[in-house]
Amino acid sequence: MEAMKKKAVVLLTVFLFHFLSPSPAWAQEADTMAATAETTETVDSAAPAEEAAAPAAPAAPEAEQTAAEEAPTDQSFHQIVKRYFLEGDWRFMTPVLLCLILGLAIAIERIIMLNLKDVNEEKLLSKVESYLQKGDVNGAKELLRKTPGPIATVLLQAMERKDEGIDVVEKSIVATASVEMSRLEKGLTWISLFIAIAPMLGFMGTVIGMIQSFTEIEAAGDISPSIVAGGIKVALLTTVAGLIVAIILQIFYNYLLSKIESMVTSMEDASIAFVDMLLKYGIAKRNTNA
Image (tube, rainbow, N blue to C red; front, side, top):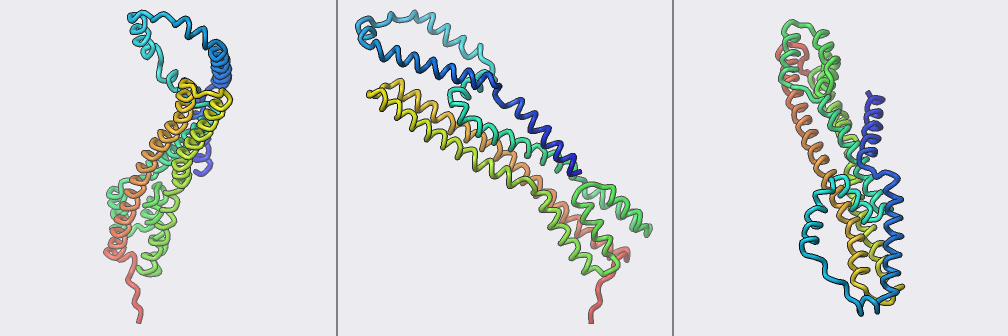
């Protein structure tokens, strides 16, 4: 089972990385865009007098409206994500993307495993009770062994200690249930870590982007609106990406918590009903201590 879980995590990680991660051409395109932007800024700064003397002719309103209408429709969702990824600088956006990929891989793996372990407690208890009514303890044990999930594991451990008295059975249930709860919560710490790290990485990219913007302003010797606005836009994109990743992972995290809470409640209810069955059919007796 553990080997299958590891393979599932690896496969999910590879799939999500292939689906969500940018292609190597993106990085080259980002470098090309940066080089083009630098060249354009150099040309614009070298000829300010010419631009002031000969203002550009206003574009036709119809052409601008047509271009504005066609631009969003021509771009797919993947292209929009790619564009913002490049504008936010792939060197800062990649760590945030890795948090999303790894967090989703762990979350999906946990969801699959929890759904596989979740069983209907009422049906399981009715089947166990049918065996206990006949006095077929071995049949009940075999049923619990074949049933996956923490409920069956707890009941089976209680059944194994039935000859030691009901007090020992109850202690065994509590101990086994605590172990099963820790297994159910496995992997949640990593998801919470990615939820906390993603916004931090976004803020770090923002701070570094702002530093780069002020460095460009200092090198230019003048506060150009295009330099300031462009630098701030690039810097804030990393923060937006980090917050989006944190929100997505938080939704999965809360779903997992609610799922685990539901399974723990079912496990407690099943344990109480099972102890009553053991006493009802005389499978286990109360401890008589003087």
